[in-house]
Amino acid sequence: MSQRDNFLYLTIALTLLLFGTALCHQFFSSKMQHMMQSCTMFTLVISVWGVDSSNQLFKYKMLFPFVIIAFSWLTLFIDSVMGDNVTLGLMLVFFTFTAIKTAKQVLFSGVVDGNKILGAICLYFMMGIIWAIIYSLIHINFMPAFNNVPSTIKWFALFPEFIYFSFVTLTTLGFGDIAPNIPISRVFVYFEAVVGQLYLTILVASLVGSRLNIMHQNHLSMTKKHDNDA
Image (cartoon, rainbow, N blue to C red; front, top):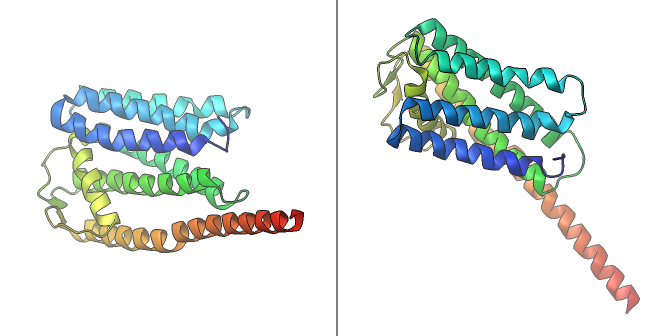
């Protein structure tokens, strides 16, 4: 795996996470939810952090998902707000730093190619997941921070609900079935809506436009070369 194809694997991993979270919530027990999270974290590490696997720090970075997964499984057996806060906090740090590393590769390295466009899509997915984690933290600590959401401290019961709500907000669909109930939840909701719109209209459009321009220039060069040969 290299910087030329790593975002393909990341796209698959994040898509499976979103589908898997919904399917586990619908048909399976909470243990399957934890298995889905565990597999996704390792795929994220390999896809994003693994590009620098020759770096000595990589082996230490690999320990971080193990720590998150250990706390995640502990929350199955310990009915504690602190346990859920720690798990969600570690997930927030992990996904945030993964998003930052993805952004650096997408925005600040080399020419725009198909892999980078996939990376921009992955970054959009991770933004939705990061906000879902934030909403889960807010709801656990300031319950009821959102209407029509289960009143539970179990993060794995809340996470699928907020994954749905986060992407509805990020894309400004606004179905209204879940709504923020307190000032702190409202401020994060409208910030997500603003960031989501700016991201799509500025960053992704610019990347796709740059890629199309490169393809057009290559086509003109080939046409000119063909005409000269003729």
